Length: 291
Ligand SMILES: [Zn+2]
Ligand SMILES: [Zn+2]
Image 1: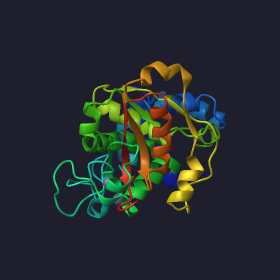
Image 2: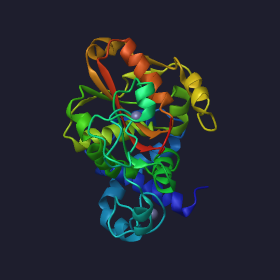
Image 3: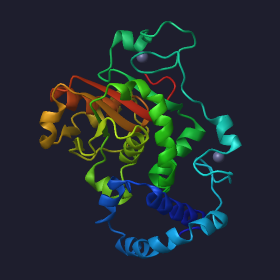
């Protein structure tokens, strides 16, 4: 049985889908054949009714903070406490991995780790440093049906990734394995990628199925950097129908959280191995000193 809060979050998520011009295709595609068919039917029946009473719902369901359950005055924002707790990543940064520097060493400066071992991801950028607030944002999107947060997160991502977006040929999410996609109903990284492209007026071209996860990998939680790399090595492959599009292209990968970068590195290996010119990454939150 859903708790009250979950039900509210769920109704809000559905309203966000209604509000979205694009109807978040990734979510809809997956919803069409997922296990919870009864709920989908109920939503399909409820949707017009929800639309009609949108104004009164805003009164009944006052907007909540995107990261916690606190009430806020406008939808799609954070409460005061979460604004205070959120740490936005800002320059100066390592030009490659995007780790913030304490002092400005110039626009092309690299951190020690990147100087020693240049990552496959040419440039990685993040909106937030990973902490309690950004973890709540990421897990809310992933596990708690807070898909209504995607448009706001897309705005922040588009800003943090402005330079990367400016010269990307393709933007693509880090894929989930089919089994996990089935259980979760949507790929949170695909929602973020869609929200970014919506913010930038459709550029660069979005490819939701550019990569696929060819084997299910155990969760990266609790693994160290070397174990994480081993865990995801060879787990991704390019969908053959996109072979042509990738050759010579600069690709921007989107993910929710950057910990050691192992997952993004494995994705980049698959793309570069297929002839991509370069791979960048844009994430919602990154740990402060991953390497
Ligand atoms: Zn909050
Ligand atoms: Zn670096």
